[in-house]
Image (tube, rainbow, N blue to C red; front, side, top):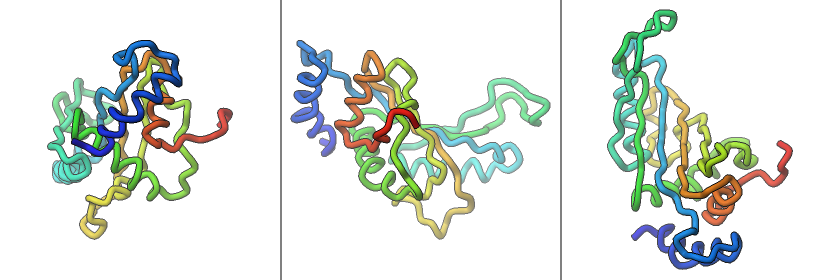
Length: 183
């Protein structure tokens, strides 16, 4: 079992139950899935860029990523329907908790000029999304073999009913949020 999953089951559930004033253990919010997305706009010209991004995202997540294809043609961007434009992977269960552990404890501290995650990045239904400008912050990526530094999106979907419950859940996993509410 993942270290973070054990901590969640043994400690965090009880803390959240008392903090949020919940009566039933099944009401406690939990993380359902984590979706990693890497858009590769240059991939329309060179398919090797998509393959390299696919390889990098598979290394980061520990699970095979899939190519995302355009849904419709856009002539202004020279995109045809079905053309690969990015890669994504959905993490659940054990792999999800292991990735979250690496994200919080290893990758986020390696971000340059990091001052905390923005609290306004919640969607209103308890889901949190964040963007990473450089995918090389993950230790799985060999910096010498990187052809281009790419950005990626990390979406954390929770079973929380609102943003406050989701914020408490992610704070209990030691996610570093900004202290001041105004920025």
